[in-house]
Image (tube, rainbow, N blue to C red):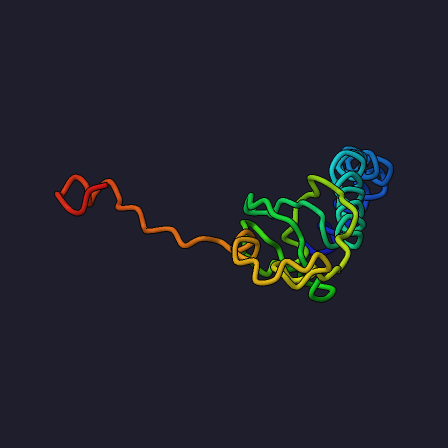
Length: 156
């Protein structure tokens, strides 16, 4: 007895609420459209530009990583890694997606072998000990830290 009354009461408003149900979903649909054009689409474009930038990386480019480290690409290891020189003689391997931007696009460095310095060149300098020492780094004595100076250690 109660069941038939419940169905009868529910059936009448459902038929009348059909067009109102679409109007209730209209703000939600508009919010999704706004999110698409203001958030999703620009992010997809930014991702596409970033992928193109990563695929165009080459040796000699000056780049900045996601951690803020600035360096020059010395070698492209594979599709996912590059060798980055962050200081003279200091090289680190970095994954390509971690490169956040290119600071300077340079022409790739050509691989040329320098002739050895010294008297072996066409000028025929003989022994030439002074010329051989020009290109080599001279050893530098370690400098004592401030803490060593304060504690009375070795002074300059």
